[in-house]
Image (cartoon, rainbow, N blue to C red):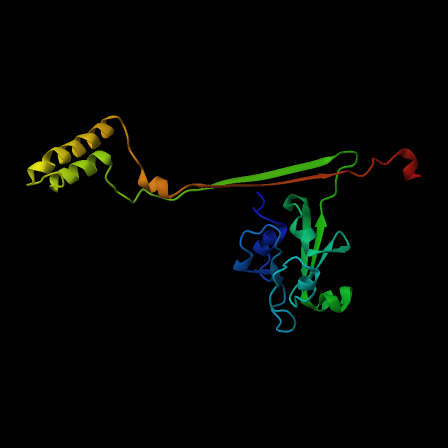
Amino acid sequence: MAPQGNALSAIQIFEPSFRIAENLDMGSNPNALPQMYVRGRSGIGTPALDESLTSEHALKNDPNQPIFMLDGYEVSMEKIYDLDIERIETYTILKDAAATAMYGSRAANGVVVITTKPLPAGRLNVTYSGNFTINAPDLSSYNLMNAREKLEAERLAGYYDTDDPSQIATKLKEYNGKLQNIERGIETDWLAAACRARRSATSTRSASPAPPTPSATDST
């Protein structure tokens, strides 16, 4: 099973030298691109991405960002970020003199070379992947009284007892009113009222046209 997430996160799992810097300022912004480095960090240039995380200025002035090659062509980091993990056949991280020898000074921060899987001739390749998660608080450690237990605790504590004869009927009416509500099934789960489960769903879809089937005349 392929790792969940994007292609860059998957590469980070298998390649220790490829690191994605944690940036809590991005929050849950799906359009924010991460900051990454292959050959360590540099102190020259913009040390962090500005507010416009996807702007050309922010990415060009990031001194740590490697260049990305996809099937022989240089592409943007956003292209790799949106790439379906299942389409990757091989990847190579170049971070030494071989990188600058092949790609020049632009490869000083390393090169990420990715090759996608070849498609079968004459077939349309459609892929879909989805992930649905539910996050709910664990309230099993709490042991709170229900409505009936709370009413009994109030009675034992003497909340409904009074030495004032004018308040006896009022206290008795209050107690009986609460008891009737409990008998009718009225109950409030205050822990559940203060918490709620968080549901999230992510999905990726891609369709790639296959190369045409070679004919007999193409082989001559």
